[in-house]
Image (cartoon, rainbow, N blue to C red):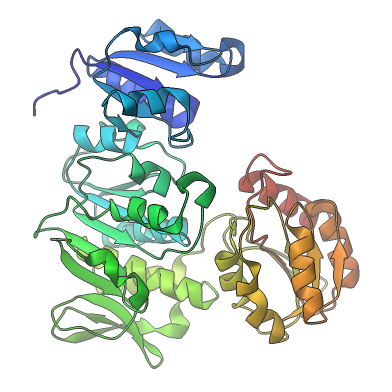
Length: 454
């Protein structure tokens, strides 16, 4: 394969974790790399010095106009850097390609990508696919938005291995030629509209999963979400689906009665009983169907998929069982950073839920949660953060008691006082964490620490 990066002039905007990974990869392939970051060099830590020592040029403490005193072949934008940031807007104005590290990783190693995106369920489904492929003995590596930069692994795996990649809309928006052999969009709900500007732009970023695929590839959607089937318009890949009614010639996994079945497009085969799927909630059954469909397309046996349904224990901060204390069960669903994710979590429990909710207010529509609140599943709501008052108003509308708390530690203390045997205490914030915590992971860890101190 021709090394298209040798001698290329590349500007990396935003260091962070994926920025450092893509800079290292490009340097190994002979590119001339400049890294620009708003932070000062002392704030960037030792990694910046290490990159400078292996040949990267650093322009830090801001993004000066002099960056464009030289021509660039490509600009690689850290996924978290907005398109309104100066180096990005100037590159676009000059007609310089702007991509993310996903594009770089794929162009260096384009074989056997199994890529997964969606508003909710990405990490659980990606991890579950990895678990199924492991059970089936299918060589693979899991990476991407799941915490392992793609550019750190693409050179370390054989071209015959599957690269199972969790991808965000931020990563996908910055692609030009990216083409996974198997690509899945799990679902699309309003999210990250502050970044993308509109739901249509957000969906268009997700659809980059499919736009370059050919007839030998697979494009996978939720068969039960007909409002998303428009995403297949103009797509040349073979369709596959999870859930929903069977369609002739379209393979996938679905539920019929109390059984999970595989449909190869023409006939069905049994996989397992619905009750064999260990993780709670309808949303996790949906994640299992998605993961099973993808794993089978990648070569896993139905028996391996069924075994994984029984043995997969989930992912940290996603409906994670924390502890049972005096008959009260605590769950950490800190990754529920939007109303739809919280809706799915609350739907897993029929009654007696003490719900801890609230966080960064991004203007999300919380009325999506009203039907579940009206059903009597939630006995008390503990609200925190910027969006707490809006969630409190919704609960009070259906006469559910509300207590305002300052943080997750206070929420755990109050929940422990209010709860009785058989109750569930659920942290499922329906909001991002950045108003109080550095990440949803930090929020979830602090919740678990507080629970384990009881």
